[in-house]
Image 1 (cartoon, rainbow, N blue to C red):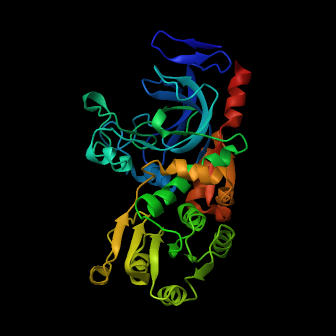
Image 2 (cartoon, rainbow, N blue to C red):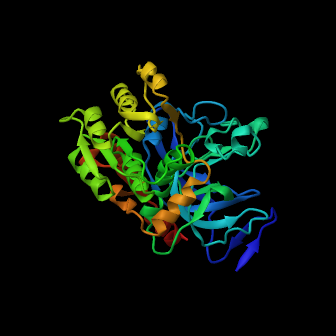
Image 3 (tube, rainbow, N blue to C red):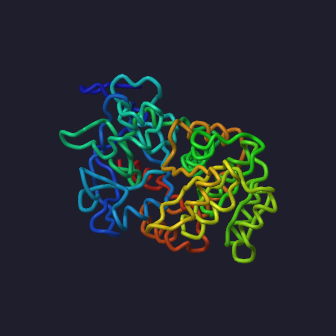
Length: 388
């Protein structure tokens, strides 16, 4: 039975919400502590999500170590009771005032970004490039939020999400698979909304990490031909083949640029660089066909030099990507729900919530060739229910 609180928030007796929750918070760099925090209350156009599973992204590791690209309360996220984590899914536990798009009990997966809705980029659907990124604190609240970046994220039992960032999860989709929708959505955004990929065009993906492997799957599902994966890890290259790569190139043993031109004739129509090194950026430029496109899907840690002259003379388009704008995640979910590809092939490890530090270590050090590490919150919820 649903009931409404004094502030217009709807709760249900079938899904009781505690006053406090367990959450990991960031102290100094690389210092995480498991603490009790108040369960947040959803506002207008928001819902409270009970987090059931959260995947670890390389950007989470960057935030925990260096702070960037997180901006919390106007600055670095350290020692501010900040909870990182952004690739999560869960069950709606409460609805903010006026929300009727979802019901309590709905399983949802989430996008990270809810733009301010008023800047030029948000009005174009590019809310991951919101001009008011980080301006959601104090008297400067512009309405922007990016969970795990500018607001508290998913390494906790509950989190708040704007209704525009939530996507219903099919009954037959596992929690772990649902956490991967946003990763597939990032690849989808780079290839379709920003890249304009058309069926029959050739795609090369450099770097068989989570985004790279799912870029292979998305490209193949969209009709790209051929789809080529460049990598150096045999096991990951094998997964790339299972996800739809027509050819895998081992960069340790072959001239990557020459091999791509042999396969495509005059070069690839699209290259997605998920490695972000000086070598791979230059390979990307030189293996792309005239008038083709290079998508930079990795964040280099330092400036790189590349052959700008070759890019200009050959009318090659270079663009970066951050996140999953224009609701690309909804399209990725549609593909996954229809079993167009099996994203679970990149899920390699699962840990309970209290073992988050070990899960992060596996992801950072690639222990046992970890690709996508998922943290399950089910044991935490079971313990909380037992305590009640």
